[in-house]
Each structure stands twice: as C-alpha cells, then as structure tokens.
Length: 174
Image (cartoon, rainbow, N blue to C red; front, top):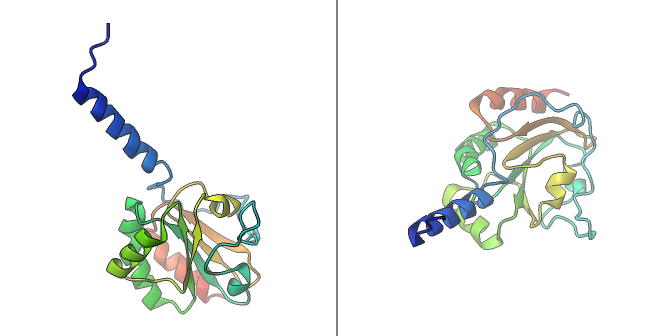
C-alpha cells in the first residue's frame, strides 16, 4: 500500500508545476547551426490562424542584418542572458527584434522596465507557433538574419560570451 502524506503530494505537485513551466526553457548553448536552418528563409511571422506577431513583421527585418531573440520573463536562462543582450545592443548597430513566447504583456513590460530593453521592437507569440516556424523548440534562442531574410546562424539556448564575437562578425560582414 502507498503511503501518501499531504506534504509528499504537495511537493510532487509543486515539482510537476515547476518542471512544466520550465519545459520550454533550455540552457543548451550550441554554436553550430542545424543543417535544416542554414539559409532557411524567415517565415511570414504569422500564427496558423494568420495572425501576425504583434509588434513587427518580416518586412521590418528586410534589407538589413538583424537579430531575432526568443524569450520570456519567466525563463531563467532568458533572464541570465539579458545583460549580455543589453551589452550587445550597445556594440552592434543592427536591430534586435524580441519575440515573447508564452508570456503576458504585463509580465514582459515589468521585466523589460526593470532589466532594460535591448529590443528595437517586441512581438508576442502566445502559443509558440511562430517560434516553431522559426525552427526553435525552446527558450531562449537567438537568430542572425541576413538582408534577404535568411537565417544565417541560430543559437538555441542561452546566449553565452563565446557567442557574442561570432554574432558581431556575422553582422559586420557584407
């Protein structure tokens, strides 16, 4: 017979809730671009229902190199990389577009007001559909997009110090 105490049940429920909340959050840091993403075109940035990501469109990225960063205020790895994004913003002249995934506008605004806003524009992807169309499965992620709207490099997981120089170099090259 199983011995369930109230404390064990509450502890199990809390652990399940936390793991479910963090399921989309990853500390994976990979410099190599998966083969299926190299030179893949940025999609229309629309959900399956045809709704555009609120805040910017693919046209806003056209004609110049830029970064797309997927994040959420609840993601610890997103929070951890935020200072690095702020520093990158001061280093590069390319726009940084943020996609908020599975988070509320209120929580996002509170986070950005407190930590600083490195983004040229911020769009919302409440169900993660646009994130998946970009070939990403977790948060955070950083994509380098070229002038022709192709993904030149993808960095899934936390943006580390080792990623900054390659990103800056990609944004500088013609």
